[in-house]
Amino acid sequence: MAKRSFGWRNETRACRCCGTPDKQKKRQCCFCGVIMSSKKSRVQEIALERIYRLFELAEKELSKENCGRSKRYVELALKIRDRNRARMPVELKAKYCKKCRAFLKAGKNAKVRVSGKMVVVSCLECGAVKKTGEKEKKAKRAEEKKRKN
Ligand SMILES: [Zn+2]
Image (cartoon, rainbow, N blue to C red):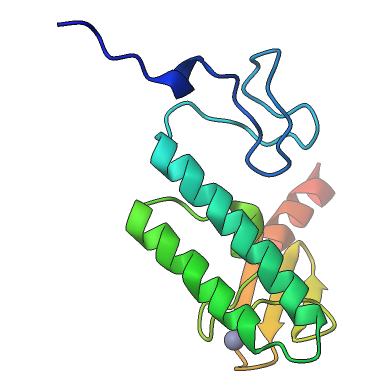
């Protein structure tokens, strides 16, 4: 039996976030630096494309006065993630509220505060708080170490 050839394997990959083709086959986008991994299946790549697109739409919708749809877009993106077992990209993880699924935009419906190396994002719609980065204790310890040296 002849081996099946999967056309997409021979195609040059394109960046899932800006669409730049990977002509040098470095598997990293030369424009935005996103790593194009080969482990992900085609299905997951398409799912990621859709997730990115839905987040774009959610951001656009939020800039309008009636922003009821932006929540819906985030919900759809999360559904696609669950169905295809795709991982939410890190840059998108900070852009929605885990509790009420609202698209977060600093100055509009989110408050962003920086304390030390930690970034605290609080959702103004439901009050949920999300902390990212190094914790305060860790940062303090690192500072003490520096002083000793
Ligand atoms: Zn929220």
